[in-house]
Length: 120
Image (tube, helix red, strand yellow):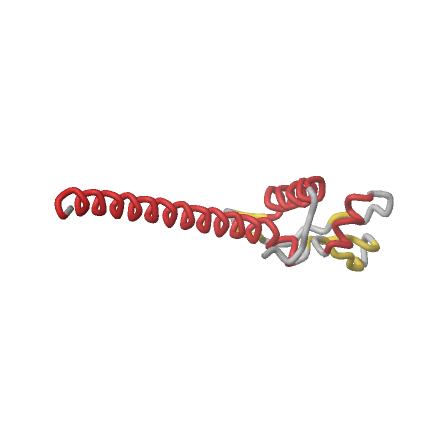
């Protein structure tokens, strides 16, 4: 399970920050450095992401306090995708189990009918 819980707006903001970081801080798909974003005390969404643990404040010598994406923030979307895949796998497993049970029940009915017709 994902270590943090986010609502839709928080997910979108975290996704936007991750996309920005991937677009500006990577070379050939490899993360070269992590972006630091300016701390905006008046931004409720940024404050919520800090409270949830997706972003963290850290001091910067040149810019004062900045925020950066945490490990939980980076792992949020992969963990959420993994949870969805597990739910889908469980759902397909249950569907196969019900289908197999229906086939077994149908085979029992047919065998019972044939036995009743030829034996009795």
